[in-house]
Image (cartoon, rainbow, N blue to C red; front, side):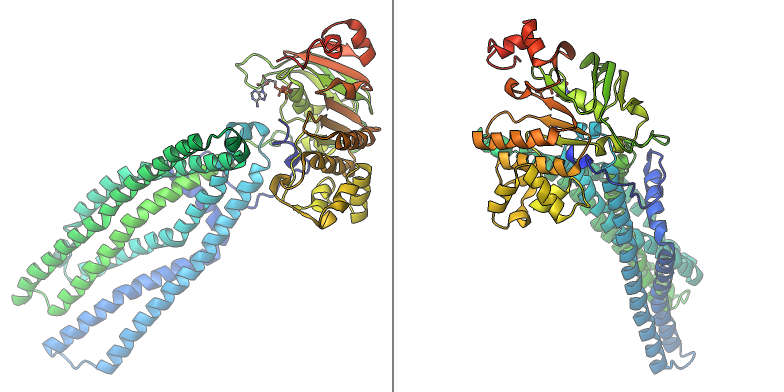
Length: 606
Ligand SMILES: Nc1ncnc2c1ncn2[C@@H]1O[C@H](COP(=O)(O)OP(=O)(O)OP(=O)(O)O)[C@@H](O)[C@H]1O
């Protein structure tokens, strides 16, 4: 139960947020774009250069056809000799310079967008480490991962290509329109007759594809969550032969992505077709009516050449706009999902004046503490009161679901009590910094989490500045040294994620060593229940005994023989303390504990 939430918090990450960000929730599209701009603005100067290059390249794209038209008219009308070598050099210069500005714009924008997503990813990841445990209870890990990876990648891709392309397209459109009106208002009108049709068509299409892209991102997150869950649960899936059921679940989620992806892409696939058809119509109008006008001498051939070229040029940005629009919508959907997480209240946000406890003694009191995970649901802990002196050992006993883990969660402030008071060394824990409480607590759990890395690094997770000698000393006290030395590579042996490759008992010995190194004033031990051989168990018990010496220890007990020495045993049932005292006192009481002890209950009741 503890495994998933405790260890990552033993060394909470400092406040690493890179970019100050607007806190308002994105209620709409423009809110999200505004927040992306916040990130982009970090590279303002580069961005200005990019925009300058876009303006230059758009201008050069207009200049080329204009020069060709002018040359043709000069030649046909015989109004002057065309200095061909100079003209060709000029034209060559325009196109080379056009390529250069486009290339520079591309390179610099890649830099801006990579910096943007780097900061976004960083902010998101560091924010994730500041969120309360309740946040993780509500979501699948894979779904959260999808936001850090897929959604952010989506924003990156769009910034690289679409954002600048859209700006460039708008510029080209406006520029083309200006020159066209200057050359021939009538031909301009003919060319632009198709534009309202294009806009209507695009609006019709994007209105349908926008929600589909959003749905696709959501489906992708859902699929990632499912994959993560089923991969980490492989052992159970195989043990219960549930492969077929898992495949059915996968198929349904995969099909949902296929369906939203299919419709989004099919409908947006109409855009180029629509644009092409309308483009051809515009060509035909310019060529047909323009040709007739040229015969009557109202326009020159050069102008018609310029118009045909511009007609192509202005439909290309329109085409691009339509295509990029979809990508942009999909990126905004991704960014919204990222900002949604960034807007989640952090665990520390209410603690500006919180006190840091330097030297914790380990005196703990609970007085009339009640707690409910959900305000509307009945409380899980009811009127809990007890007192622990520094260095005492407290055992928590009770049936499953009695509230033992919840009680510890309140002490470590993963949740705050709904009523009552909890103190540590006489201070209300609500006015203490969470970090200072957790730094003074270590957890040794049934299934302790180990990270990918060497055994040495995993032990050093208890105290990052510990020397190699200190790591080995702690391992010796924890009874872990001898098994580590027998392993291939010893302390440098690489562990796979979650300590796969070593046994359950060995994992526990490493967890004891880690806690020993952390040297905290308080300990939480979730006793191993089974699956550990007798010799290893003796070693673990010995290690734990040394670890508990002089520290306030809370032991969640599953078997009674290990808690005989406890200074206090609290028997919990349905969130209440029903019995309390030492082992001898409780046996004499002839109540719940005594029945357990005499073996009247084969195991703790459900
Ligand atoms: N995150 C949560 N949200 C809502 N309810 C929860 C949550 N965690 C635990 N509960 C509920 O709170 C009750 C007490 O759970 P808790 O884990 O504290 O019991 P426990 O005594 O430690 O049990 P076990 O020995 O099986 O670990 C249970 O009914 C459980 O369903």
